[in-house]
Image (cartoon, one colour):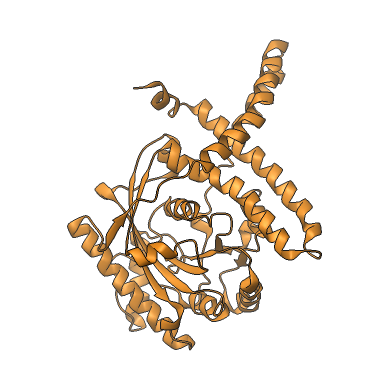
Length: 365
């Protein structure tokens, strides 16, 4: 085992990574708070600044995937679609089967320059979570309670405010509403049968309200819907802990572009279109399980150095004084001071959480 591979398995290294993420995140949140004074003066400048501040935080997680674990991401699509990536507002529909599926989505956002301006429809409880929720608040993320009767006006208002967003944005929707498990799938398919809807093998029944509302509210802003079907080679089930330990995975993503004009204007028609899409996604998963590849040309967008450079910047700024302070603590010889310091640093590592299981659509279909 090489030195770098050994370092990736060490808890103290994980704590230091967590410390950098948490402290830099709090600093970024404070700067975002200060930018609020720009909103009544120059809203678009406020938005551009917050896109870059959010990038500085989210790219630290992308760095772990791209540079720490060196996970490969291969796109299966066509050349015409590739040429549009990062050059238009889009809605992304992604299957929700894996713990790190959001991270694979983020790495594609980063490689095409839209990580800072990426959007989601998020659970309202996350609004009060430091780092994640606070950063999303300043990015004008749409939060919902997952009860459509209560969410309708809030979601519609939030989406319409994005109509004049100055940066190209990718708006992520997990139409299944929650991460796939066998138990959830069994219950979901019972609902599908009771409603006379198509039975799916690899996906949960999509919730249509959030999708149809997003499409209706963002017409004239969003140019297309990107359907993304994600899988991992070798039937792997990757985890954030695996990424933190430097485990390399190979992700395959099938991307299909649907111009917004192809999606029916009315709610019922758009809902039927979504159900049909998920039947097609199921067929793509079946093909992948049998043949090990998705249809389409294969592309491997090169990783960019900015995520690594951003992390190294924050690590240098934050760890240099930490190491100096730590030396002073241990040099003091005080057991209470030493234990307090170790407890504080250890607690900080637990703030490395994932938003993926709390990014949902309203419950009502």
